Image (cartoon, rainbow over all chains, first blue to last red; front, top):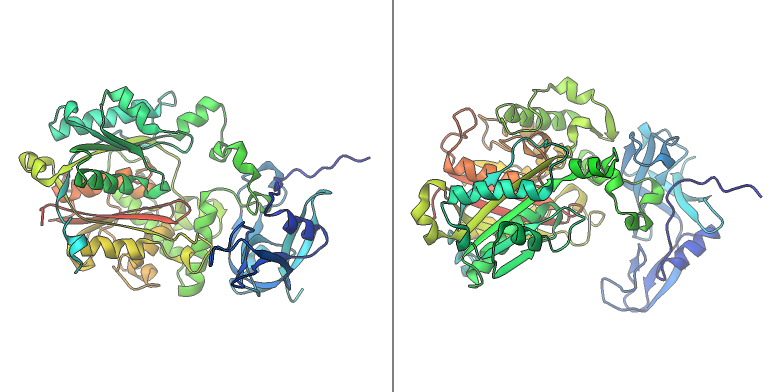
Length: 139
Length: 395
């Protein structure tokens, strides 16, 4: 069997985030929604920051959103990204409300702008981890 | 006017300061040795015996714990009140505030506050070349960050700069003006890490780091220390020559984080400065010089707005007008700031404010007739914020 060549940092899921990463593996973008006050939240947490309820359910999001802000990495900070520069790291504001850090891919970094509509795509990194990334909606 | 805030106006003072010079120390230096050098200078300047110091508020580098203990042991200070603060870049201003509160509560009389950075030396000792490798291994397991290639402090501020440009039309040329102006100040500061003047073109053509920032938008990694001694104002009256009165202070926290609301294009200085001004009984018009925690060029512009020196969104045009230069309405980061003087996490901003209101600088560095200085500390991924108003006079 071929060795896995993935050489970038990988998230280590916690009890709170495991359902999120499990869903990503099935190409579903999810977040928690508070059972008591209805606030959607991301990143995953044990408690609702609005009402302190610990009751929450996972739900699938549309995967659509827009670029709230972004930066283009020109410098290599980690050897795993040596072949990636320049790459876009963006804060995506999802239509459901939560904001999520990710990458905007399949685009010339120089034409990314705040407000650009995007949708989720999934990139398998390892057998355990699939990363949610975003592409321009038009593409 | 809140009676609760105004009761603290001018009741405390900074009676002595000390620093290492240069931002670049021999790579075999230790943070403790740098701290000691700054402390000896501050104690001497205050004209006190170290036995009079019974309070200690310090901040160590990110990899130190109970930092105040090692400092107390090293300097032989038997502190009744001792603690470390952990507010990122706001830690140094928050150290002074904590000292004032401890004195007010009767827990201490004379408090030594200090910080030392030995990141370059640490990298040298570790045999590593890049600052990013100081990220603890345990942090690399953090989710929703490193897997997307999001590394380093500059990227956080780049998000804010991009957003500020989007909302208000701020430009890279505006950032360049900040870098050039602060370098001009640093060229007159023999203790600054970077003193060679730069041009707008050099700034715009510098190596790109994280858009919209190039190398000259980013503060350097520095080594150095700063120490400040705080006492009651009546204690300071005997040593007036070296005194800067603490007219007001304030704190604020964008506790929802950098990614919430519009936090990335504004600081908690919006709240913190209002509190400090109210305690001091002043408005921005009364301030003669500002020392803003400038992790990047954009942070200088953003805080000029947040502290009320111009309207929100007009910071770019404000710096282009020359407002922050030596002849401007609010000379800002007059020792060069983090960008050029060096990144001693804002402790040197406090020292510069003290020296300006004492009017103890040589003419080429002195803001003419400076009586009131405002100083900010901003950090913890731009969440934590503290403000100080220093004055030549107690009221």
